[in-house]
Length: 336
Image 1 (spheres, rainbow, N blue to C red):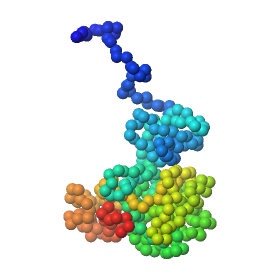
Image 2 (spheres, rainbow, N blue to C red):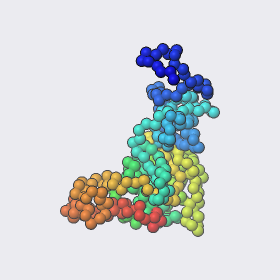
Image 3 (cartoon, rainbow, N blue to C red):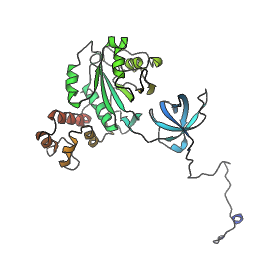
Image 4 (cartoon, rainbow, N blue to C red):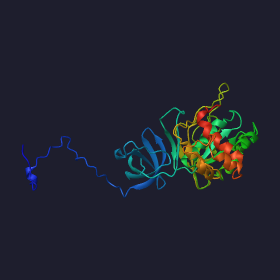
């Protein structure tokens, strides 16, 4: 066996030929400093439509990103053909740091986490006041996911011509959530869209809601230039609506500076990925009272310091009740 000394000649070293004829592998990856910045508008079977300088670009994820996936709302760096012409394909080489992340699981026992949207500022939770009936537990779960992901919630109640909003407003009044109440007539004449638009200006807002509540109808009113789907009907037997949106899509808000992200209708909103300790951050009036809590306190046990904090008058008891109701929502099913 031949041994090489300290000062070997390159000609003396045998190198194994590369049978594939391609370049040798290296751990040094290009920085792509000249890559263009874009925003992911929608994802469809591995192809991502991104907006780069007002031009829609179809792209695919670069292999060097590994298993990291880009989602709607992501800010990305792209290289390649950025003309936006038919049959062209760019490459996403970098996913920028996210400011927020809305996630859900199929149910509370499902370990697979689904990312709904990235970098959204606000979550508009759309619920009908009747036909179908409101589902407070589903609303609670959406609120927990919003607080955990760093999004501000907005409650949009539709079909007020069929039922009054008083009961829901009483249930969520202590959470100080901004809300809009709309009717079918207001959706048709545009008044509802105008009032909702006031809450969306300058923000990226994701819309979620149970099937049949009128979410896509509202989005169509907010973005009339890009009507997504025909509206579905509510099944008279099951009370469930038909999914009219099959994939998340970001749309520029008409008449204001902002984005609307329409998402598929949900029948469940699992919270398997949620860390309950983060939900307290959405209650700034209660958070200081947790300093005296025992380690790993669930905030719903006998030794919780929040009871004393509220009893001393630092916060409204109704706020503590709302916090504990949200924390307990993982233990209840959506339809309860």
